[in-house]
Length: 308
Image 1 (cartoon, rainbow, N blue to C red):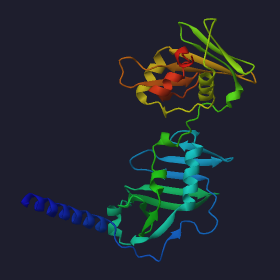
Image 2: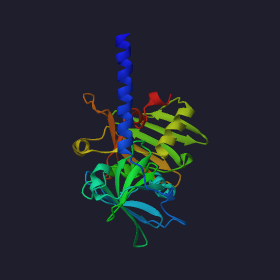
Image 3: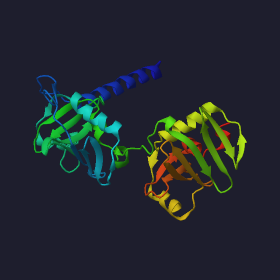
Image 4: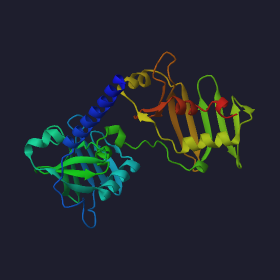
């Protein structure tokens, strides 16, 4: 009984500690109620400038309705990510001011030197310039301070998660973007043999070194769909570059579309003694090296075992 009482008292004490920490980190707001970030019609946005002391300085610009990364690399931005971010601005609600005490900046993670600074512009005008701080204890709010001001506000939603990303998370992972029906043939060569898929009427035929073999049409169509709308799993890291630069690809795959164009890519399959089970991918003659992790990478060389 004594041990049981001790456990109960210990549990009550722990609960009181949690309540104390929660309330001390989440002070009472001086607010008149939640207000939208942008009142009325949201402004047109064409530039995001994200300065992160711990990561890359990232700039994204919208030109001719297309978003691109212009710093630290030049690359098309992910349409899905950009839609999430831009639509997110429209739903942000400000739940009020937590404090206006300049000595509290460090506590809430909104110091000039350590916070992520986000500048949002449209038509050459700055529409938002803020410092993004810590998540609130409930994880559904973010502490934010407008640059040059002392008021620390509580912003409702997952705003910080959409902005604080690595450079590669902003990049469009699309490699090919065709309709499945656009592809009429695929050929894969690995030095040992040549495998080919050819569309005849509405059925696919398969040959290996010129010898026909039966294939499952559903599996073939799944493979064709994968190639037609191919997206990488990640972009290469520095340790990937030497292998692609110094060795011959394990497999080269080419496919032809209905207008007669042929697209070719090179594959480096995972090394047997490597813990990094990833396939390296590069368009033949291209300069961007992509990563595919084990399961998806195994699909790309068009092996008969995957199609029969």
